[in-house]
Structures are given as structure tokens and as C-alpha cells.
Length: 486
Image (cartoon, rainbow, N blue to C red; front, top):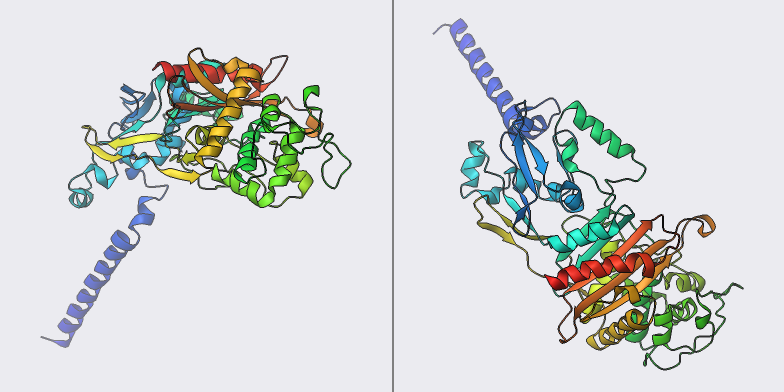
């Protein structure tokens, strides 16, 4: 072979090597970047080439898919979309996913490797499995009662099964129809823009993603801390709480909402029934910052990773405060802020003999044929107090409903314990107060753990008188009745 022939052969070999190197770089090392490049529509087209898996509430399928006849073969549909929007979230071809549609997207879209018995081969062959289904823990009757009770008011409800942490109701109002912007049309874009511009923020999940000052409902945490720490040993015995109680380091007295609280030495039982700020603020200072922080965190405060699996906003109980600020925080004011989820965990922890279970919104994940992929199991979140303390706090909460500010939550034939809260906010407390109620309920003829605990917050209402007992307690009663009747 001539020199020229050898050179030509070597050059061709180098070209082949270079071509292989380039193909390897593109197909292996840059594959992920190219797959997710905004200009690459192939994966998007593949995503919507088959129906999406279903989200289920009991035996009902509350989501579906419909053929579009367009570039993307299928788009998401919702049955009773506004009723379950706080649970499902949205799945939009234009605006992405949220809530369970987001956290369980891989399963619903069919890309989760657990959906196939031949996951490796399917990945090589680029074959997508049918979308799987998500079974929620939601009780339809409780959810309907929650949304109906909230009506047109801004608010939220979370109901939990105390023994397991299963979320039975998750409602946020005003709500929205996630199917109104599921596609790519001009109408979908208009619906999205209209919802985003709405001052009432219908797409805000107030149950999980919004915090509010909990007001007097936080007194349940303070009472538990006072009993668990030994600051109070007998709920019926007089305390050494003074009146007036002047906030430490200030000349400002901590005022009460009723003159019945305006005397020294009230027992914890009386102070809880009447919702006395001076007594519970004083006891919070006696418990001390470190133990109050520990008590709050046992119920879920200050946890930035509280997942249901949808992540909740962080509820806040400050870890650095002076005694005056601690007194205010101990009655649910100052910088204390909670999601309805965490306040439902407070009620559930009391009902469950002091053990707080991890809240869960998903009961199980299945393939499209119904075979189980993953089943949820109850898990302990934290132990907030001992059983004896929990029993005493349960009695305190029962007295609130039987003799105090929570009478509107009474249910014939059931034992109900609760705590009202009316939290001031805004500059100089000029905003409409937040009306709160937390509670649990169970059959009167058993000592078993009550089957339902609930938190209700009404953030804005046109009612002439805004109180937790007047606005929020009836909603909680309706939700608890729905569970007890189920």
C-alpha cells in the first residue's frame, strides 16, 4: 500500500473515531440536557400520549383524562374539581403540576419504574407503562362537610384520624377548578390568568401552605406543657397566676376577653374554659422558653420538612424571645403562626394519648390494573406528652365544649373536646380577626382513641361578629359528625 493510501486510511479511521466520540457525547453525556431542553418537544408529546393515572377518594375516581384531538393526545379532567382541588392540585399541559399531581407525577404519568416488571428493558425500548393510581385517605363525606361549612368564606379545614395520622379532609376556600386550565388553548390561559389575578387567591392551599396566628387554640399546647413540666400538678387547684398580670419587663398588663378571668389564682381548668389570657400567658413564662419550644415542636412547629407527601409551610414558634414575648406566644400571639395542618395535629395528639402521628394524605399507590405498588403505614411523628397529661388536657378541652366557648361544637351522643381561638392581626389589630376552632370527637360509650380530630380557620368573613366559637366551631362539628356517621 502506498503512503498516500495509508494516510487516507488513517484519516478515515480518525473520522470514524471522532464520529463515535461525538455520538457518545450527545447520546450519553448530554442526553439529559437535550431531553429537558425547552426546544425539545418529544418528551412533552410522549407525556401526553396516553391517559394519566387516577387520583381516588374511596371508591370514587376524582380525576380522568380526555382525548384532545390536538398535538397533545390527552389532557387532565377533574370530577368535582373545586371540591378536591386542595387535595389533587392541578396537572396542566402549560403550567405544570401541583399538590398530589406534582408529588406523585412519576406514578401518574407512567414513568415510575415500579409500574413495570421489566423496568430496564422498558427504559431501553423507551416504552412507557400505563399511569398508576393514587388512593388518598380522604373521606368524601368529611370533605363535603368541610367545603360546605366554609362556604364562600376564606378559610381551611384539616381533619385527621388521630390513631393513624390519615388526613380525612383537606379543604381550602375559595377554591378553583383545576380542569379550567389543564390544556393549551387560549381559554386555558385566560382561566389561569384570571385565577392568578384574583385577590382572594383561590389557588392558595390555605390548609397546608398558609400560616396564621393560632390565637387561643395554642393554649392547648401551653396547658400540656404546664402539666408535663410539673408547673401545674392539679388542673382544679388554684394557680399562683396574679391579676393583673403585667408582661415581664414592661408596664403592660395582659388583658382578658372576659371579666370572669379578672381575678388572681384561677385554676387551669377555669382558665381554659374561660380562655383566660393572663393565666395561660403567665404559665407559659413559668414553663420557660426551652420547654415551651420543645412542646410546640413536638406537635410540628418549626419543622421545615413536614410532608404529607405534599410539603406544608413551616409553622413557627420562636426559639429566641424575652419573657414578655414568651407570654404573648403562649397564648398564640406575637410571632407564633401555624398552618391548619399543625393545629389539627395538636388536637389529634391530645386525642391519641399524647402521641402525634405523621400526617398522611396517600393511602396507597397502585398500577393501572389495581396491583399494589406501595402501601402507607402509620408512623409516629413525635410523643408530645404522656398519656396521663393527655387525659387531663382532654378533660380541659371537653369542659370548653360543655361549659365554655365551644358549645357550638356539641354533638348528641358523642364526647367532644375543643378549643376556640380568635386571633387578632394587622396594624394595631385592625384586620378582621382569624376565627379558629380545634377539636376531637368520639363515641361517648368507649375509652378508645377518638376517630377524628379537626382544625378550622376562617380568615375572612362578612359576619358581624367574628369568633372561633361562632364561626369555626359549627364547621368543625359538621365535619366530625360526617366522620362519626360514616
